[in-house]
Image (tube, rainbow, N blue to C red; front, top):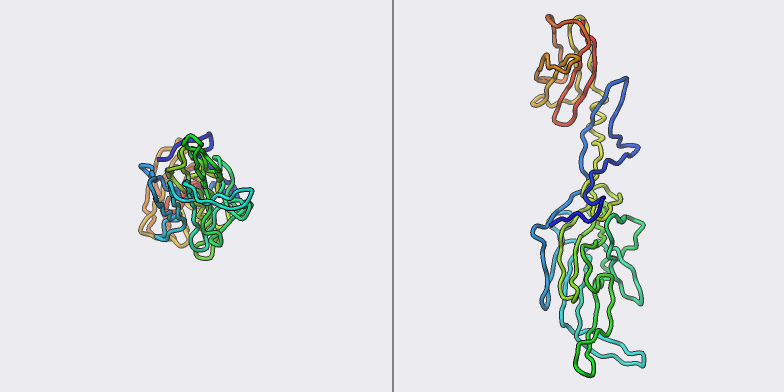
Amino acid sequence: MKRNNGPLAGAHKLRSYSALAGAFIISGNILQGQTINVIVHTNIDPDQFFDGGSSVYELDLNNDSTIDFTLSILTNTDVTVSYPSGGTNEIPGNILWAIPENANAIAAYQTAGYVFPFAFYITENVDGDVSWYGNSYPLQSLIYSGIGSTSGGAPLQIFSSGSWFGGQSEKFLGLRIESDGDTHYGWLRMSTSDDNKSFTVIDYAFNTLPDETIETGQTELLIVDIAHSHAIAEVSVYSFDKSLYIYVPGKNTSTGSIEIRNTSGQLVYRYALESGRMHIHLADITPGVYGVRIITDTFVYDKNIFLD
């Protein structure tokens, strides 16, 4: 299950982009756009544990029924050891592979011709600035170890490679997927055991905004739905001769309401938003300043007006 690994884990964040403002102030009117979370987070509950001679975990990062990555652990398998004096030998070992499927990729580094995925800490950036390795490197080593024995027969670790070797608790695998021609970044939170013979997957997430950064452990990024915000900016409300005139562009008339409140916040009238253009006659209203609120299924609009 998901755990809180630090002060920013799962924090509610409201990012400000030039094209995605969180609030609009036009002529004194506060126009509230619909905020949406662009991070899709999947919590695995209970956590999934993998061990044994050969265990495989298949990850569908964006939940589109297509496998994006595969993790495979091999225990007590044969691995090749090369000796400085020349020659090789097969000895028992443990391997944890990460395999990027299709055009996807894993954040990793390369050394001596081998690729090793990073074990990120929480709140590290996963984006285009990271080094990525795709399926031209189909077997990427989280763990690659060989075990020999001493002259007395006791187990001896001959070599060990990989950022996930030796027991890594709740670290993050950086992931990149290609979907419908767009690039998306994500992460998988997982742990490896001290003996390198098992791993546990905990949760995963990805950013639905193409080419945008996601932080490891981040589960929420709130922005304003700009399409709805444009609609709000075109709303018109004005009064004349104890009448209220309302224009809401492109309104689906099956939902929505209009509220009129006095300066004390008391509800004076409530009407159904029956069409995109409405004329409401308020013959018995006391002259003064009132707050008009239009509520639809996609936005809320507020304006103060004077009714006489």
